[in-house]
Every structure is written in structure tokens, then in C-alpha cells.
Amino acid sequence: MKLDLLMSSMFSKSAAVLFVCLCSLGNSQAALFEDDEARKAILDLRQRVEVMRGEADQARRASATEVTGLGKSLLDLQRQIELLKAEIATLRGSNEQIARELSEIQRQQKDQSQAIQARFAKIEPVMIQLDGVEFLADQNQTRDFEAALAVFRKGDFPTAQNLFSGFLARYPASGYAVPALFWLGNAQYATRDYREAMANFRALIVKDPEHVRAPEAVLSVANCQLELKDSKGARKTLADLLKAYPKSEAAVAAKERLAALK
Figure (cartoon, rainbow, N blue to C red):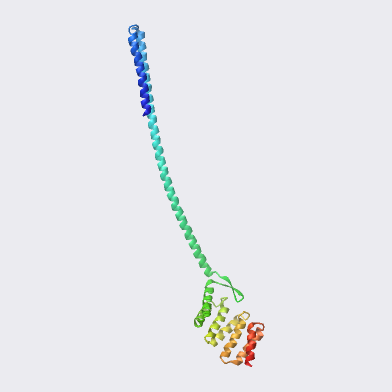
């Protein structure tokens, strides 16, 4: 718009100058030049004015066209910028959604992995060391044995009997079987079930005569026999203990009881 006003002003000024010139020529030279040369000069000036006017109009139209094109280009650019902003916002939202979904998937995988590991931990045997013996046992065996032993140590011998009996029924080949027989026999001895106690102590000796609990089991058999008034059987059991395990602590107690029985 400013460009159009400027060009219009310039054209007006030029036209005024030419008009004054024409008038001057017409007034001053009309009297002097009335021939064809004067008319040609006037026509020439008029043609120049028309040419200048045409050029001015052409320049104004070109400027208007250029301004219109520039405005259109600016509008197109603005639209493109807005589209890009919208696309960026959409992509940002998509990225945030993907990040949330990925985080959730990772959390689920972690939970599943921990659950699988916990499940396998219950099934997969681990190395156990008890009474100087190493053996493999799963978590279920360890849990049940320790639960029964804890009840025994509290003095609840009837419940301990049930727990150790159930353990041996479920895990007859377990590495805990010999210790379970030992504590089961002791629980039965505490409840004066001497015959069942003897049976379990003898089962322990047969199962593993080299076990660290074996000498104690033999001594416990003799104690049960004494409680049942079987002095003869007790003396034989104590003598067998001295022969089989002469260096054990149970052998020291066996000597004292043999001396007391004579």
C-alpha cells in the first residue's frame, strides 16, 4: 500500500511538470512556432507522458502482484507452520504413550520373572548341611522339617509327632529323613510311647548306621527298653553301642548305665 502511494505521488509530480512544460510551450511558442515542427514537439511530449503513465501503471500492477504473492506465500508458510506444530504435538503425545506402554510392559515382565524365579526356587533343590551331612532338598522339605522341629522345641510333643510322621510320609527319600526319625523318636519318648520310639530309632540305625545321630539312637533304644523294664535287652543294646561306637559321647553314657545295671 505504501509503495502504491509513493508511485502515485511520483507520477503526479512528473505529470504536473510535463503539463507546465506543455503549457509554457503552448503559450510562449504558439506565437513563434505555428508550423508542423511545433505540433510534432507537442505530440512527442504527449507520447512521453503516455509512456511514463503506462510504465507507472505497469510498475504499480507489478508491485501489487508481488505484494499479493508475498502475502499468499506468508499465509502458506503460516499454515505449514501450524501443521508442523500439530504433527509435533501428535508425535509428542504418541511418544509419551509409547513410553508409558513400554514402562508397563517392563514392569509386567519384571513381575513375571520374579514370580517364575520364586516358583522355581520352591521346586529347585538347594544344598543343605545338617548334622554334618550335606544333601539336596527343596524349599518345601526345609520348611516342613523346620516347622516340625520348632514345635518340638516348644515342648508340644504330640503335635511334633504328627508333623514328623507326616513329613516322613511325604518325603521318605529326603535327606531330612534320618534327622526326622531321630526327632520323631524323641517326641514319642517324651509322650511315653516307648515302643514306637524304639521302632523309629532302630529305623534310623538301619537307614544310616554311620550318621552322627546313630549312637544317640542306639542309646535311646536302651532307654526305651529300660522304661519297658527290659533290663536284659537294655544291657545288650548298651554293649552293642560300646562295640559299634566306642569313641562317641553316647558310649560314655552307655558305660555309666551298664555299671548301674550290674
